[in-house]
Length: 231
Image (cartoon, rainbow, N blue to C red; front, top):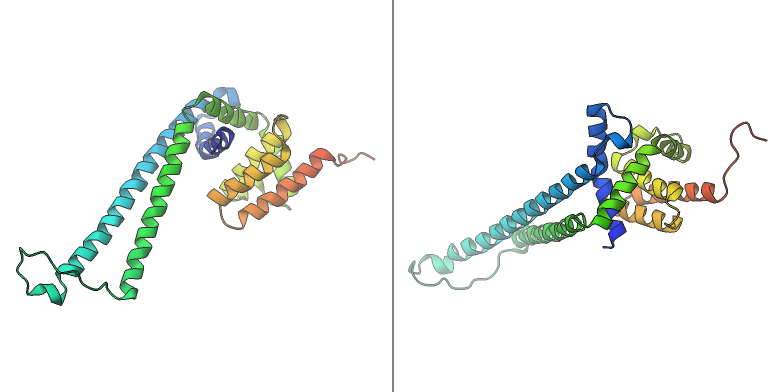
């Protein structure tokens, strides 16, 4: 994971909490919200989630171990053997029994992988360069929220911005913030990164939806349509 991708993810994860803080405090400008502190707290949450995932994975693997041990001990070949004697190895259970256990092992592996990703992302959050870029993304969005949300509405075929799936809306906001205000970031990179965020955090169909909207935004940036009322 590169630093800017990590910054985008941190910004995305922090968006919901930042909006809550704005509504709770009644603040309306970016300068009145401690964005850096909220992002820092988000990294702490990521670390906690990673620990929970690892703990859950270990518990699931322990259940598989206990199932196999108990199956062996309670097998007819071992029931009449003395307790202090090592149980004989036995044939594995029916495939229908083991399939569920294998699924548990796979789920545990996925949780471990996610824990590693979360820990890596939280580690990136401790880097000044990553944190500063995430803060810049969020602050720039807040300063230009009205025009950015109007852009989303313009190209989302009549959808009310507030009724879009929250994660999709926030991914679009981050991408359009970059596309409209970060001249050092190629538009194609912003689109590709948004699609990757959608694949990771949203529903399967969301990546195509987001790619389609951002493709239209890109065309509008390169070839802006005339304002209403202009000839």
